[in-house]
Length: 106
Image (cartoon, rainbow, N blue to C red; front, side, top):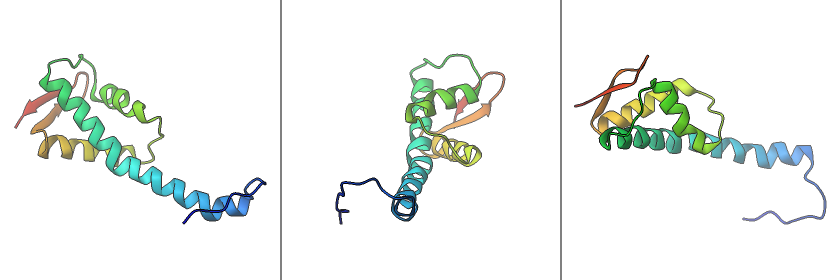
């Protein structure tokens, strides 16, 4: 269903009722699926292609996540999902996060 376009601005009530649930749903999707999968791929691909620079996990995470230009509401949850994906899909485990990211194949 499409909302009919009006020649007036959306009211605050319409914004809260229609737009906000849509924005929240899309934001949750980005955090639950897109960011963790992309960051896990980014780090894993960098590891397997031997191109990761010597820096902390946080820096690699932020570099990859910045692609989405999205403020993450629960970073700990997203990081846990990144680690899970790296382990089960890419067979990699993070051994050390600071001062330099260290990863091992499992």
